[in-house]
Length: 83
Image (cartoon, rainbow, N blue to C red; front, side, top):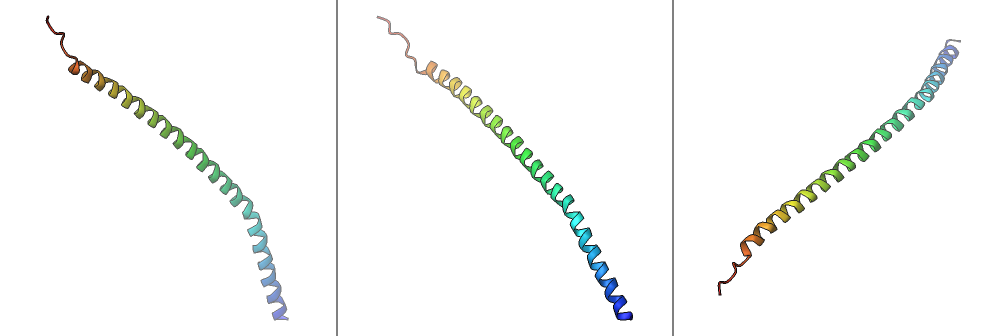
């Protein structure tokens, strides 16, 4: 009789743990979805920042190149010859 009671307790404990584990999966699933959305948002934000920084660097480089070209052009002009 004692062995039957023990098996009943063990089986009921196993079933209750299985039921608890199934209920916990929905929270885990939602947490995973939230993490994926946050990661996607962070990737988009990072991409936009990189694009902005690259564009700024290219424009600054072009500006400095024009400025340098103007200085070189002034130095390479030959003075008019006196005739």
